[in-house]
Image 1 (cartoon, rainbow, N blue to C red):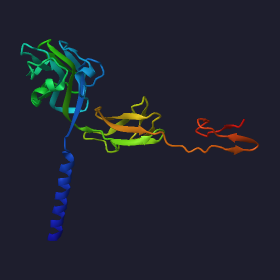
Image 2: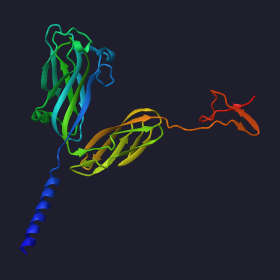
Image 3: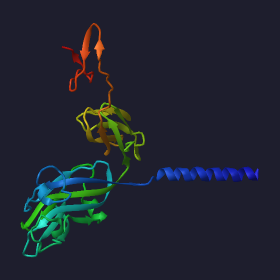
Image 4: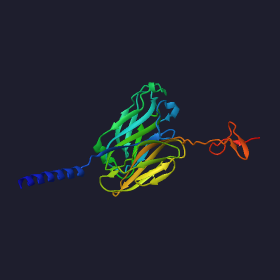
Length: 290
């Protein structure tokens, strides 16, 4: 009897541990990068030579409205500025705002730059991480739109891009399997979102954007592409608490698939003669003999 009580106690302890583990899942860290201001309007920072992207005086104040419906806590915001310095006075810098409240400033790291587009001559991009979580969460408006702003203190900067990456915790977790795949033109690419989960509710919607102008829905989907290229597939999920979250995967489309066609050399009652460069249909190459 005593042995039975011991086994029962161990069993109850195991069940209790499992319940505690399920009640406190690990908090996922996610991020969302947005373009605040872009000279060319394409939403992308340059990767090498600023001149190849385009630039202009950045007396312009960059603003961007962003909503992250699945966020439950903002952990940090990293601002990024691509520029070359033309402020020969040795002053200047940037101020960063969240919902019109100043959350950080930085000085120009290259105050006496030569106003050159040469990356070696200018210390860019400038990145500033603001990690006062208490301040950020007191200002962030969860579930609705928030405004990020980058304000230069001088018009003596050439710049082309202001951006920001918002790092946050979430309880809604979208997953795509696989995150990368390569297929030929016309061959189905398959996507599985069954690993997605919500800590607070049940997922009610799985929407897909295949990156080529077509969409789909469901936990698992397949899609065939008609053209070669690299496509970004976006999964959007929503749960019963009305939180929405997104994630992406990449598909590289190559091809098209090879099709073997054999040219006809002789067909009764007429003689057919194949000549180089003659094509018909999918590659059956022939022409009537003269």
